[in-house]
Image (spheres, rainbow, N blue to C red):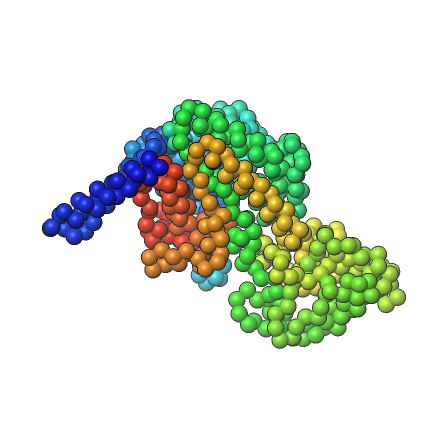
Length: 523
Protein backbone atom coordinates (compact mmCIF):
# COMPACT_ATOMS: atom_id res chain seq x y z
CA UNK A 1 0.00 0.00 0.00
CA UNK A 2 2.83 2.42 0.88
CA UNK A 3 4.40 1.81 -2.52
CA UNK A 4 1.14 2.63 -4.30
CA UNK A 5 0.67 5.81 -2.23
CA UNK A 6 4.20 6.92 -3.07
CA UNK A 7 3.63 6.39 -6.77
CA UNK A 8 0.30 8.23 -6.70
CA UNK A 9 1.91 11.13 -4.81
CA UNK A 10 4.59 11.49 -7.46
CA UNK A 11 1.95 11.48 -10.20
CA UNK A 12 -0.10 14.11 -8.32
CA UNK A 13 2.90 16.40 -7.80
CA UNK A 14 3.82 16.16 -11.47
CA UNK A 15 0.24 16.95 -12.46
CA UNK A 16 0.03 20.01 -10.17
CA UNK A 17 3.34 21.32 -11.45
CA UNK A 18 2.03 21.12 -14.98
CA UNK A 19 -1.25 22.85 -14.09
CA UNK A 20 0.54 25.70 -12.29
CA UNK A 21 2.74 26.50 -15.30
CA UNK A 22 0.75 29.03 -17.32
CA UNK A 23 3.39 29.11 -20.07
CA UNK A 24 3.35 25.36 -20.72
CA UNK A 25 0.23 23.26 -21.03
CA UNK A 26 2.21 20.02 -21.57
CA UNK A 27 2.03 17.80 -18.45
CA UNK A 28 5.42 17.13 -16.90
CA UNK A 29 6.63 13.56 -17.08
CA UNK A 30 6.58 11.49 -13.93
CA UNK A 31 10.17 11.46 -12.63
CA UNK A 32 11.97 8.15 -12.90
CA UNK A 33 12.55 6.65 -9.46
CA UNK A 34 13.69 3.16 -8.42
CA UNK A 35 11.09 2.75 -5.71
CA UNK A 36 12.24 0.06 -3.30
CA UNK A 37 14.44 -1.60 -5.94
CA UNK A 38 18.15 -0.88 -6.29
CA UNK A 39 19.46 -1.13 -9.86
CA UNK A 40 23.12 -0.37 -9.15
CA UNK A 41 24.31 -3.86 -10.03
CA UNK A 42 22.01 -5.74 -12.40
CA UNK A 43 22.66 -9.35 -13.37
CA UNK A 44 20.55 -11.31 -15.86
CA UNK A 45 20.30 -15.11 -15.79
CA UNK A 46 18.55 -17.16 -18.41
CA UNK A 47 18.83 -18.95 -21.72
CA UNK A 48 18.90 -17.86 -25.36
CA UNK A 49 16.18 -15.26 -24.79
CA UNK A 50 18.33 -13.48 -22.21
CA UNK A 51 21.37 -13.77 -24.47
CA UNK A 52 19.58 -12.04 -27.37
CA UNK A 53 19.62 -15.06 -29.68
CA UNK A 54 17.72 -14.31 -32.87
CA UNK A 55 17.35 -15.66 -36.42
CA UNK A 56 18.84 -18.99 -35.33
CA UNK A 57 22.13 -17.48 -34.15
CA UNK A 58 23.84 -15.31 -31.59
CA UNK A 59 25.48 -12.18 -33.02
CA UNK A 60 26.54 -8.75 -31.77
CA UNK A 61 23.56 -6.72 -32.92
CA UNK A 62 21.17 -9.27 -31.50
CA UNK A 63 22.99 -9.13 -28.17
CA UNK A 64 22.79 -5.35 -28.15
CA UNK A 65 19.02 -5.69 -28.58
CA UNK A 66 18.63 -8.37 -25.90
CA UNK A 67 15.93 -7.61 -23.36
CA UNK A 68 18.46 -7.50 -20.45
CA UNK A 69 20.53 -4.90 -22.28
CA UNK A 70 17.40 -2.88 -23.03
CA UNK A 71 16.36 -3.12 -19.38
CA UNK A 72 19.82 -2.02 -18.23
CA UNK A 73 19.55 1.08 -20.41
CA UNK A 74 16.21 1.94 -18.78
CA UNK A 75 17.64 1.28 -15.31
CA UNK A 76 20.26 4.01 -15.78
CA UNK A 77 17.72 6.76 -15.12
CA UNK A 78 16.89 5.05 -11.82
CA UNK A 79 20.47 4.62 -10.65
CA UNK A 80 21.48 1.64 -12.76
CA UNK A 81 25.15 0.99 -13.43
CA UNK A 82 27.23 -0.44 -16.26
CA UNK A 83 26.02 -3.61 -17.96
CA UNK A 84 28.51 -5.86 -19.74
CA UNK A 85 27.81 -8.68 -22.19
CA UNK A 86 30.02 -11.46 -23.64
CA UNK A 87 29.74 -10.09 -27.16
CA UNK A 88 30.31 -12.22 -30.23
CA UNK A 89 33.02 -11.19 -32.70
CA UNK A 90 30.72 -10.42 -35.63
CA UNK A 91 27.22 -9.92 -36.96
CA UNK A 92 27.05 -13.05 -39.08
CA UNK A 93 26.67 -15.30 -36.05
CA UNK A 94 27.78 -18.86 -35.50
CA UNK A 95 30.67 -20.46 -33.62
CA UNK A 96 34.00 -22.12 -34.28
CA UNK A 97 35.54 -24.82 -32.13
CA UNK A 98 39.18 -25.34 -32.97
CA UNK A 99 38.52 -23.67 -36.31
CA UNK A 100 35.59 -25.96 -37.18
CA UNK A 101 32.08 -24.54 -37.57
CA UNK A 102 29.86 -25.86 -34.78
CA UNK A 103 27.03 -23.32 -35.12
CA UNK A 104 25.86 -21.77 -38.39
CA UNK A 105 25.37 -18.17 -39.40
CA UNK A 106 22.18 -16.19 -38.79
CA UNK A 107 19.17 -16.19 -41.09
CA UNK A 108 17.90 -13.28 -43.14
CA UNK A 109 14.87 -13.00 -45.42
CA UNK A 110 15.91 -13.32 -49.05
CA UNK A 111 13.57 -11.27 -51.24
CA UNK A 112 14.02 -13.12 -54.54
CA UNK A 113 13.39 -16.54 -52.99
CA UNK A 114 10.92 -15.26 -50.37
CA UNK A 115 12.52 -17.58 -47.83
CA UNK A 116 14.90 -17.32 -44.87
CA UNK A 117 18.47 -18.18 -45.86
CA UNK A 118 21.79 -18.14 -44.05
CA UNK A 119 24.08 -15.15 -44.22
CA UNK A 120 27.06 -15.99 -46.38
CA UNK A 121 30.36 -16.26 -44.56
CA UNK A 122 32.24 -18.21 -41.94
CA UNK A 123 31.85 -17.46 -38.23
CA UNK A 124 34.77 -15.71 -36.58
CA UNK A 125 33.84 -16.32 -32.94
CA UNK A 126 36.11 -19.06 -31.57
CA UNK A 127 34.91 -20.90 -28.47
CA UNK A 128 38.44 -21.53 -27.26
CA UNK A 129 39.28 -17.80 -27.31
CA UNK A 130 38.15 -17.32 -23.72
CA UNK A 131 36.89 -13.89 -22.69
CA UNK A 132 38.18 -12.29 -19.52
CA UNK A 133 36.27 -10.09 -17.11
CA UNK A 134 32.91 -10.18 -15.43
CA UNK A 135 29.67 -10.18 -17.38
CA UNK A 136 26.28 -8.97 -16.21
CA UNK A 137 24.41 -10.84 -18.93
CA UNK A 138 24.62 -14.53 -18.07
CA UNK A 139 22.09 -15.66 -20.67
CA UNK A 140 23.30 -18.94 -22.17
CA UNK A 141 21.73 -20.25 -25.39
CA UNK A 142 20.62 -23.84 -24.95
CA UNK A 143 20.64 -23.79 -21.15
CA UNK A 144 17.97 -25.71 -19.29
CA UNK A 145 17.05 -24.84 -15.72
CA UNK A 146 19.40 -27.35 -14.10
CA UNK A 147 22.31 -26.27 -16.29
CA UNK A 148 22.53 -23.03 -14.32
CA UNK A 149 23.64 -25.11 -11.33
CA UNK A 150 25.92 -27.49 -13.24
CA UNK A 151 29.63 -27.23 -12.41
CA UNK A 152 31.73 -27.50 -15.55
CA UNK A 153 28.96 -26.33 -17.86
CA UNK A 154 31.46 -23.74 -19.11
CA UNK A 155 34.46 -26.08 -19.44
CA UNK A 156 35.93 -25.71 -22.95
CA UNK A 157 37.37 -29.22 -22.73
CA UNK A 158 33.87 -30.66 -22.47
CA UNK A 159 32.27 -28.85 -25.40
CA UNK A 160 33.18 -31.31 -28.14
CA UNK A 161 31.76 -34.20 -26.13
CA UNK A 162 28.52 -32.35 -25.42
CA UNK A 163 29.33 -32.08 -21.72
CA UNK A 164 29.59 -28.28 -21.71
CA UNK A 165 27.95 -25.35 -23.44
CA UNK A 166 30.03 -23.58 -26.13
CA UNK A 167 28.49 -20.18 -25.42
CA UNK A 168 29.12 -20.33 -21.68
CA UNK A 169 32.59 -21.81 -22.26
CA UNK A 170 33.58 -18.49 -23.88
CA UNK A 171 33.07 -16.48 -20.70
CA UNK A 172 32.74 -18.73 -17.62
CA UNK A 173 34.91 -17.52 -14.76
CA UNK A 174 36.58 -20.93 -14.42
CA UNK A 175 36.33 -24.39 -15.94
CA UNK A 176 34.36 -25.58 -12.92
CA UNK A 177 32.15 -22.56 -12.29
CA UNK A 178 28.36 -22.46 -12.51
CA UNK A 179 26.21 -19.85 -14.18
CA UNK A 180 24.51 -19.17 -10.86
CA UNK A 181 27.85 -18.90 -9.08
CA UNK A 182 29.13 -16.38 -11.61
CA UNK A 183 25.99 -14.33 -11.03
CA UNK A 184 25.98 -14.46 -7.24
CA UNK A 185 29.70 -13.62 -7.10
CA UNK A 186 28.89 -10.17 -8.47
CA UNK A 187 26.70 -9.34 -5.45
CA UNK A 188 23.83 -8.10 -7.60
CA UNK A 189 21.38 -5.61 -6.16
CA UNK A 190 18.85 -6.56 -8.83
CA UNK A 191 18.45 -9.60 -11.07
CA UNK A 192 16.22 -11.03 -13.75
CA UNK A 193 15.56 -14.75 -14.13
CA UNK A 194 13.81 -16.09 -17.22
CA UNK A 195 14.55 -19.82 -17.49
CA UNK A 196 12.69 -23.03 -18.28
CA UNK A 197 11.77 -22.71 -21.94
CA UNK A 198 14.48 -25.14 -23.01
CA UNK A 199 13.21 -27.69 -20.51
CA UNK A 200 10.46 -28.44 -23.05
CA UNK A 201 11.69 -26.73 -26.23
CA UNK A 202 14.08 -29.46 -27.38
CA UNK A 203 11.28 -32.00 -27.09
CA UNK A 204 8.97 -29.76 -29.10
CA UNK A 205 11.37 -28.82 -31.91
CA UNK A 206 12.38 -32.47 -32.31
CA UNK A 207 8.76 -33.36 -32.97
CA UNK A 208 8.56 -35.19 -29.67
CA UNK A 209 11.34 -37.67 -30.38
CA UNK A 210 12.65 -37.24 -26.84
CA UNK A 211 11.24 -38.61 -23.61
CA UNK A 212 9.07 -37.08 -20.93
CA UNK A 213 11.26 -37.53 -17.87
CA UNK A 214 8.53 -36.79 -15.34
CA UNK A 215 9.31 -38.95 -12.32
CA UNK A 216 13.03 -39.19 -13.08
CA UNK A 217 14.95 -37.06 -10.55
CA UNK A 218 18.35 -37.44 -12.24
CA UNK A 219 19.03 -34.87 -15.01
CA UNK A 220 22.36 -36.59 -15.72
CA UNK A 221 20.36 -39.31 -17.47
CA UNK A 222 18.31 -36.93 -19.63
CA UNK A 223 18.73 -36.60 -23.38
CA UNK A 224 18.95 -33.26 -25.14
CA UNK A 225 15.36 -33.56 -26.40
CA UNK A 226 13.79 -34.71 -23.14
CA UNK A 227 11.25 -32.92 -20.95
CA UNK A 228 12.59 -32.02 -17.51
CA UNK A 229 10.83 -33.57 -14.53
CA UNK A 230 8.70 -30.80 -12.92
CA UNK A 231 9.98 -31.83 -9.47
CA UNK A 232 13.56 -31.33 -10.65
CA UNK A 233 12.60 -27.96 -12.08
CA UNK A 234 10.90 -26.92 -8.82
CA UNK A 235 13.96 -27.82 -6.75
CA UNK A 236 16.37 -26.07 -9.12
CA UNK A 237 14.22 -22.95 -9.37
CA UNK A 238 13.87 -22.63 -5.62
CA UNK A 239 17.65 -22.93 -5.23
CA UNK A 240 18.23 -20.27 -7.89
CA UNK A 241 15.87 -17.79 -6.26
CA UNK A 242 17.21 -18.46 -2.77
CA UNK A 243 20.82 -17.88 -3.83
CA UNK A 244 20.02 -14.74 -5.79
CA UNK A 245 18.05 -13.15 -2.94
CA UNK A 246 20.32 -14.30 -0.09
CA UNK A 247 21.87 -10.83 0.34
CA UNK A 248 18.66 -8.89 -0.14
CA UNK A 249 18.67 -8.40 -3.91
CA UNK A 250 15.38 -7.55 -5.57
CA UNK A 251 14.47 -9.16 -8.86
CA UNK A 252 12.04 -9.99 -11.61
CA UNK A 253 11.09 -13.48 -12.80
CA UNK A 254 8.98 -14.62 -15.73
CA UNK A 255 6.80 -17.62 -16.36
CA UNK A 256 6.77 -19.54 -19.64
CA UNK A 257 4.50 -19.30 -22.67
CA UNK A 258 3.17 -22.43 -24.28
CA UNK A 259 6.00 -23.32 -26.63
CA UNK A 260 3.52 -24.76 -29.10
CA UNK A 261 2.03 -21.29 -29.75
CA UNK A 262 5.30 -20.06 -31.27
CA UNK A 263 5.37 -19.57 -35.06
CA UNK A 264 7.82 -22.48 -35.33
CA UNK A 265 4.80 -24.71 -34.67
CA UNK A 266 1.93 -22.75 -36.18
CA UNK A 267 3.20 -21.71 -39.61
CA UNK A 268 3.10 -24.88 -41.70
CA UNK A 269 -0.54 -25.95 -42.20
CA UNK A 270 -1.62 -29.52 -41.56
CA UNK A 271 -3.42 -29.58 -44.93
CA UNK A 272 -1.21 -27.95 -47.60
CA UNK A 273 -1.77 -30.54 -50.35
CA UNK A 274 -3.71 -29.13 -53.31
CA UNK A 275 -4.30 -29.96 -56.95
CA UNK A 276 -2.93 -26.54 -57.88
CA UNK A 277 -1.57 -23.50 -56.05
CA UNK A 278 -4.50 -21.76 -54.34
CA UNK A 279 -2.60 -19.55 -51.90
CA UNK A 280 0.39 -19.40 -49.59
CA UNK A 281 1.97 -22.48 -48.03
CA UNK A 282 0.50 -24.92 -50.56
CA UNK A 283 2.13 -28.01 -51.99
CA UNK A 284 0.67 -28.25 -55.52
CA UNK A 285 0.40 -31.98 -56.25
CA UNK A 286 -1.52 -31.89 -59.51
CA UNK A 287 -4.89 -33.38 -60.43
CA UNK A 288 -3.41 -36.35 -62.27
CA UNK A 289 -1.20 -37.25 -59.34
CA UNK A 290 -4.08 -36.95 -56.90
CA UNK A 291 -6.26 -39.22 -59.03
CA UNK A 292 -3.45 -41.77 -59.23
CA UNK A 293 -2.77 -41.61 -55.49
CA UNK A 294 -6.44 -42.09 -54.68
CA UNK A 295 -6.66 -45.11 -56.97
CA UNK A 296 -3.36 -46.77 -56.15
CA UNK A 297 -2.72 -45.85 -52.52
CA UNK A 298 -5.35 -43.93 -50.55
CA UNK A 299 -8.31 -45.96 -51.82
CA UNK A 300 -6.79 -49.39 -51.06
CA UNK A 301 -5.48 -48.16 -47.68
CA UNK A 302 -8.90 -46.78 -46.77
CA UNK A 303 -10.54 -50.06 -47.70
CA UNK A 304 -8.07 -52.20 -45.76
CA UNK A 305 -8.11 -49.98 -42.65
CA UNK A 306 -11.91 -49.90 -42.65
CA UNK A 307 -11.91 -53.68 -42.33
CA UNK A 308 -9.90 -53.24 -39.11
CA UNK A 309 -12.19 -50.51 -37.73
CA UNK A 310 -9.60 -47.83 -38.52
CA UNK A 311 -11.05 -46.35 -41.66
CA UNK A 312 -11.01 -42.85 -40.16
CA UNK A 313 -7.22 -42.77 -40.46
CA UNK A 314 -7.33 -42.21 -44.23
CA UNK A 315 -9.63 -40.38 -46.65
CA UNK A 316 -9.26 -39.74 -50.37
CA UNK A 317 -7.38 -36.61 -51.42
CA UNK A 318 -9.47 -33.71 -52.68
CA UNK A 319 -9.22 -32.74 -56.33
CA UNK A 320 -10.54 -29.23 -55.65
CA UNK A 321 -9.67 -28.24 -52.09
CA UNK A 322 -6.91 -28.70 -49.55
CA UNK A 323 -5.93 -32.13 -48.28
CA UNK A 324 -4.02 -33.08 -45.14
CA UNK A 325 -0.49 -34.41 -44.95
CA UNK A 326 0.18 -38.10 -44.47
CA UNK A 327 1.94 -38.65 -41.13
CA UNK A 328 3.04 -41.40 -38.77
CA UNK A 329 1.33 -41.37 -35.38
CA UNK A 330 3.24 -43.56 -32.94
CA UNK A 331 0.35 -43.34 -30.46
CA UNK A 332 -1.87 -45.40 -32.77
CA UNK A 333 -2.24 -49.15 -32.59
CA UNK A 334 0.26 -50.60 -35.06
CA UNK A 335 -1.68 -52.48 -37.74
CA UNK A 336 1.35 -53.63 -39.73
CA UNK A 337 0.52 -57.30 -39.28
CA UNK A 338 -3.09 -56.81 -40.36
CA UNK A 339 -2.14 -54.67 -43.38
CA UNK A 340 0.54 -57.13 -44.43
CA UNK A 341 -2.01 -59.93 -44.41
CA UNK A 342 -4.57 -57.83 -46.28
CA UNK A 343 -2.18 -56.81 -49.06
CA UNK A 344 -0.34 -60.12 -49.51
CA UNK A 345 -2.84 -61.63 -52.03
CA UNK A 346 -2.51 -58.65 -54.39
CA UNK A 347 1.02 -57.37 -53.76
CA UNK A 348 2.91 -60.48 -52.72
CA UNK A 349 4.48 -61.15 -49.33
CA UNK A 350 7.51 -58.85 -49.67
CA UNK A 351 5.65 -55.79 -50.95
CA UNK A 352 2.81 -56.37 -48.50
CA UNK A 353 5.28 -56.43 -45.60
CA UNK A 354 6.69 -53.11 -46.83
CA UNK A 355 3.21 -51.58 -46.90
CA UNK A 356 2.52 -52.89 -43.43
CA UNK A 357 5.73 -51.42 -42.02
CA UNK A 358 5.20 -48.03 -43.63
CA UNK A 359 1.46 -47.55 -43.09
CA UNK A 360 0.79 -49.53 -39.91
CA UNK A 361 0.61 -46.30 -37.87
CA UNK A 362 -0.09 -43.87 -40.71
CA UNK A 363 -2.94 -41.39 -40.76
CA UNK A 364 -3.75 -38.05 -42.28
CA UNK A 365 -2.93 -35.00 -40.19
CA UNK A 366 -5.61 -33.03 -38.37
CA UNK A 367 -5.93 -29.46 -37.15
CA UNK A 368 -4.84 -30.68 -33.71
CA UNK A 369 -1.42 -31.69 -35.08
CA UNK A 370 1.44 -29.18 -35.28
CA UNK A 371 3.84 -29.45 -38.19
CA UNK A 372 7.21 -28.03 -37.17
CA UNK A 373 8.70 -25.24 -39.28
CA UNK A 374 11.73 -27.28 -40.30
CA UNK A 375 9.42 -29.85 -41.91
CA UNK A 376 8.35 -27.47 -44.67
CA UNK A 377 11.31 -28.15 -46.99
CA UNK A 378 10.89 -31.92 -46.51
CA UNK A 379 7.31 -32.08 -47.79
CA UNK A 380 7.28 -33.80 -51.18
CA UNK A 381 10.95 -34.83 -51.03
CA UNK A 382 12.14 -38.43 -51.22
CA UNK A 383 12.91 -40.20 -47.93
CA UNK A 384 16.38 -41.66 -47.57
CA UNK A 385 17.50 -44.79 -45.79
CA UNK A 386 18.57 -42.55 -42.89
CA UNK A 387 15.29 -40.67 -42.39
CA UNK A 388 12.62 -43.05 -43.69
CA UNK A 389 12.21 -44.81 -40.35
CA UNK A 390 12.48 -48.28 -41.92
CA UNK A 391 16.15 -48.28 -42.84
CA UNK A 392 15.72 -48.16 -46.61
CA UNK A 393 14.91 -45.54 -49.21
CA UNK A 394 11.36 -46.29 -50.39
CA UNK A 395 10.81 -46.75 -54.14
CA UNK A 396 8.64 -44.56 -56.36
CA UNK A 397 5.81 -43.76 -56.21
CA UNK A 398 5.90 -44.21 -52.42
CA UNK A 399 8.73 -41.73 -52.03
CA UNK A 400 7.19 -38.31 -51.36
CA UNK A 401 7.18 -37.23 -47.71
CA UNK A 402 3.74 -36.20 -46.53
CA UNK A 403 2.10 -37.19 -49.82
CA UNK A 404 2.76 -40.85 -50.53
CA UNK A 405 5.04 -41.56 -47.58
CA UNK A 406 4.23 -40.63 -43.98
CA UNK A 407 6.09 -37.79 -42.33
CA UNK A 408 7.97 -39.21 -39.36
CA UNK A 409 7.91 -38.49 -35.63
CA UNK A 410 10.43 -35.64 -35.90
CA UNK A 411 8.26 -33.79 -38.41
CA UNK A 412 5.04 -33.38 -36.42
CA UNK A 413 3.84 -32.86 -32.86
CA UNK A 414 0.78 -35.00 -32.27
CA UNK A 415 -1.83 -34.31 -29.56
CA UNK A 416 -0.32 -36.68 -26.98
CA UNK A 417 3.04 -34.92 -27.31
CA UNK A 418 1.44 -31.48 -27.16
CA UNK A 419 -0.35 -32.54 -23.97
CA UNK A 420 2.96 -33.62 -22.38
CA UNK A 421 4.50 -30.22 -23.18
CA UNK A 422 1.51 -28.35 -21.77
CA UNK A 423 1.44 -30.42 -18.57
CA UNK A 424 5.12 -29.78 -17.88
CA UNK A 425 4.85 -26.07 -18.72
CA UNK A 426 1.88 -25.65 -16.40
CA UNK A 427 3.82 -27.32 -13.59
CA UNK A 428 6.87 -25.11 -14.16
CA UNK A 429 4.67 -22.02 -14.13
CA UNK A 430 3.08 -22.98 -10.82
CA UNK A 431 6.57 -23.17 -9.35
CA UNK A 432 7.70 -19.86 -10.83
CA UNK A 433 4.70 -17.91 -9.57
CA UNK A 434 4.88 -19.51 -6.12
CA UNK A 435 8.57 -18.66 -5.77
CA UNK A 436 7.92 -15.09 -6.94
CA UNK A 437 5.30 -14.65 -4.22
CA UNK A 438 7.44 -16.29 -1.55
CA UNK A 439 10.46 -14.11 -2.30
CA UNK A 440 8.53 -10.90 -3.02
CA UNK A 441 9.78 -10.73 -6.62
CA UNK A 442 8.24 -8.98 -9.59
CA UNK A 443 6.37 -11.51 -11.73
CA UNK A 444 5.98 -11.35 -15.51
CA UNK A 445 3.21 -13.31 -17.21
CA UNK A 446 4.76 -14.02 -20.61
CA UNK A 447 2.17 -16.72 -21.26
CA UNK A 448 -0.57 -14.08 -21.29
CA UNK A 449 1.49 -11.88 -23.62
CA UNK A 450 2.05 -14.79 -26.02
CA UNK A 451 -1.67 -15.50 -26.00
CA UNK A 452 -2.30 -11.88 -27.05
CA UNK A 453 0.28 -12.12 -29.83
CA UNK A 454 -1.33 -15.30 -31.13
CA UNK A 455 -4.89 -13.96 -30.94
CA UNK A 456 -5.18 -10.63 -32.70
CA UNK A 457 -1.82 -9.20 -31.74
CA UNK A 458 -0.69 -6.30 -29.57
CA UNK A 459 -1.14 -2.73 -30.79
CA UNK A 460 1.36 0.06 -30.19
CA UNK A 461 1.09 3.36 -32.02
CA UNK A 462 0.13 2.63 -35.62
CA UNK A 463 1.55 -0.88 -35.50
CA UNK A 464 0.26 -4.30 -34.49
CA UNK A 465 2.64 -7.03 -33.40
CA UNK A 466 1.59 -10.65 -33.74
CA UNK A 467 3.08 -14.12 -33.75
CA UNK A 468 2.69 -14.54 -37.52
CA UNK A 469 5.87 -15.91 -39.03
CA UNK A 470 8.14 -13.34 -40.75
CA UNK A 471 5.43 -10.66 -40.95
CA UNK A 472 4.08 -10.39 -37.40
CA UNK A 473 7.08 -8.48 -36.10
CA UNK A 474 7.41 -10.25 -32.75
CA UNK A 475 9.53 -13.23 -33.78
CA UNK A 476 12.68 -13.76 -35.76
CA UNK A 477 13.10 -16.06 -38.73
CA UNK A 478 13.73 -19.19 -36.69
CA UNK A 479 10.15 -19.01 -35.44
CA UNK A 480 11.19 -19.47 -31.81
CA UNK A 481 13.26 -16.48 -30.70
CA UNK A 482 12.02 -12.90 -30.68
CA UNK A 483 12.97 -10.24 -33.17
CA UNK A 484 14.63 -7.07 -31.90
CA UNK A 485 11.17 -5.56 -31.59
CA UNK A 486 10.00 -8.67 -29.76
CA UNK A 487 12.82 -8.27 -27.25
CA UNK A 488 11.75 -4.66 -26.80
CA UNK A 489 8.26 -5.88 -25.98
CA UNK A 490 9.68 -8.32 -23.41
CA UNK A 491 11.63 -5.47 -21.82
CA UNK A 492 8.44 -3.40 -21.56
CA UNK A 493 6.40 -6.10 -19.85
CA UNK A 494 9.31 -6.70 -17.46
CA UNK A 495 9.27 -2.96 -16.71
CA UNK A 496 5.54 -3.09 -16.02
CA UNK A 497 6.07 -5.91 -13.51
CA UNK A 498 8.99 -4.15 -11.82
CA UNK A 499 7.06 -0.90 -11.50
CA UNK A 500 4.06 -2.70 -10.04
CA UNK A 501 6.08 -4.65 -7.48
CA UNK A 502 8.61 -2.08 -6.33
CA UNK A 503 6.88 1.25 -6.91
CA UNK A 504 9.48 2.31 -9.46
CA UNK A 505 8.59 4.49 -12.45
CA UNK A 506 10.79 3.05 -15.18
CA UNK A 507 9.80 4.08 -18.68
CA UNK A 508 8.90 1.91 -21.63
CA UNK A 509 11.07 1.82 -24.71
CA UNK A 510 9.66 2.90 -28.06
CA UNK A 511 9.10 -0.38 -29.91
CA UNK A 512 9.03 1.44 -33.23
CA UNK A 513 12.78 2.01 -33.14
CA UNK A 514 13.52 -1.72 -33.10
CA UNK A 515 13.56 -3.63 -36.42
CA UNK A 516 11.48 -6.73 -37.06
CA UNK A 517 14.15 -8.20 -39.37
CA UNK A 518 17.85 -7.69 -39.80
CA UNK A 519 19.23 -7.18 -43.33
CA UNK A 520 21.72 -9.51 -44.96
CA UNK A 521 24.57 -7.12 -44.16
CA UNK A 522 25.13 -5.53 -40.79
CA UNK A 523 28.11 -3.30 -39.90
